[in-house]
Amino acid sequence: MSETSVSAEDFEFIRKQVRTFIRSTVVPRENEIMTTDRIPDDLRTASAEMGLFGYAIPEEWGGLGLDLTQDVELAMEFGYTTLSLRSMFGTNNGIAGQVLVGFGTDEQKQRWLERIASGEVVASFALTEPGAGSNPAGLRTRARRDGGDWVIDGRKQYITNAPIADLFVVFARTAEPQPGNPGIAVFLVPADTAGVEVAPKDAKMGQEGAWTADVAFDGVRVPADALVGGEEAAGYRAAMTSLARGRVHIAALAVGTAQRALDESVSHAAHTTQGSDRIGDFQLVQAMLADMATGVLAGRAMVRETARAYVSGEDRRIAPSAVKLFCTEMVGKVADLAVQVHGGAGYMREIPVERIYRDVRLLRLYEGTSEIQRLIVGGGLVRAELGKS
Image (cartoon, rainbow, N blue to C red; front, side, top):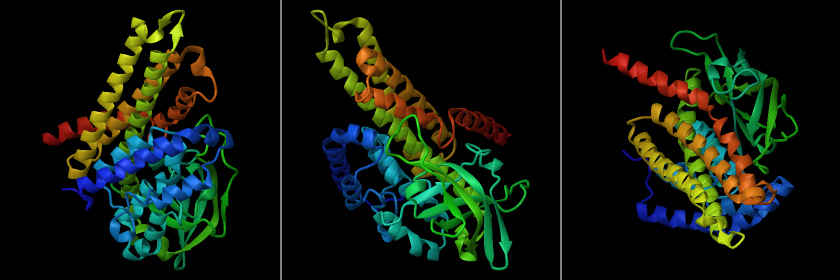
């Protein structure tokens, strides 16, 4: 059953608005974003006015209330330009916002969700640590009870939007893992809480304008009502559910970026000559374009089917990992071919496919590496078979 109240007709209007904004307003400013390593304030304001900070937040909390089948359609539009734009509001709609939507208490939702949906509050998902990335079971950040409060100590790494965050959704260990209980809880920690220290933003290979940083929690004291869901056991479920949904979104982003790389390559091949010949007439160039187009078509179909199965409840674990694996690997191959089609020009800064080549490398790493996705898919299939007997 769909979780959205947005009709197909209304959604198509939203999608067209987003497409026009991305292609007419953002695409012409990609080099500005890359050079300055920031999203211009007017683009941030325009994104907020369009409702993009809360498109996946339920309408009752001020969002647009889109379900995952609609989310992926927008993600494919966002992927057509610099991925840093989507990163600006991605955590609000995705892994941070969805933790509150799915697991927050009524009071927590009341306090935070409307401000997250409007863009007044930027939420940041603080899970990854130096010793715990794709597998949350390795968490070392600790939260201990002290009277009626919780005290959090630890360090997080590569945290998206940390330098501009107003709220950290922090995963911390509250107990040693036991069978059926990983001992992980989730806390809502305002960025201005004493003991929260955000390091300088990271210098990254790509995705200029999307800021990440380390975050330290040194004796950070939060009240009991900062515990998401009001119970410790909600933490690990929140992490796994939010990551699975986010993996489908990332796959859709990859498809959008692969489409952009293909479009740039087709245009280059059709209008660039080698001597008196168009390079698009060369059969080996056509073969590269064909491989790119095949990957894009397969990825788009897989994303849509996976989103449908997620919304229906049919598959919320294996398919999200499979689609994230396929599409992020696919876009890496497409970006590589795009540079090849462009020849020496493809290696030049300020040529779109050069930026794309660097930007998409991260997609195979965050929200679970390709290796972790393979383990989830393979292990899940074996356990499902054993469960039949």
